[in-house]
Length: 263
Image 1 (cartoon, rainbow, N blue to C red):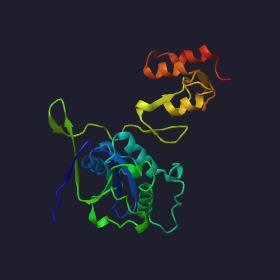
Image 2: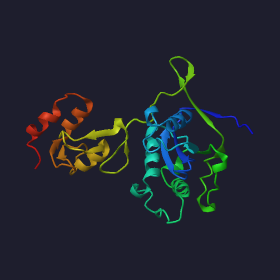
Image 3: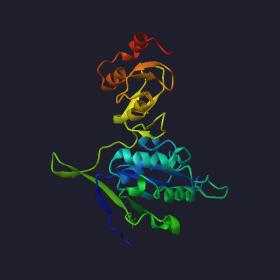
């Protein structure tokens, strides 16, 4: 039976792959995409075609389930990260670890059912879409998605409106843009939210808000100065902001001399 594809504009989805290769059958992969049809082709063609290294040369893979309806890519990326790392997400610490005889596919679905019950995800207008009906499972009675989240079946096609041309076109967002995790809250950091230390060798990556809270003292509304939580370097908040905005590129080489290094 042919099922018409759902055409969705401004598509942000988090998907679940299932490996059907007899040698690796049962393996799973969770990822983010703006174009599920292109993405599954990349996974099955291998890393050289844009697929992930974890799925390369292990196919064929089936994209069996996708959660879509996220308001933006940041929201979808955070969902993806939490689904991949439930043990590191503060919202999912209540989920028990994978049981010895529990299949990885079942474990992924158990995590998903729990995720849809907690904030902020339980407030989003998400759709749970089974792309391959033969892989569909019933959610536990006590862990069904909220009533405002429909469960759909069939393929999807992602489109977006090009307002400058007045036409519909495929999205151009890249799926494999590097994703960083905040060193302070362990959530995904979008490039527009990211801030880093002035020291060239420091590996700190954080949300601007997270680091600002760490630097705040007393009754100040805006941070003034503080020490990097990773390397201990003393830093003026104004210098961090100037570096983020690209006001001067040699700050990393002058910052240590200007502020006396780490205390």
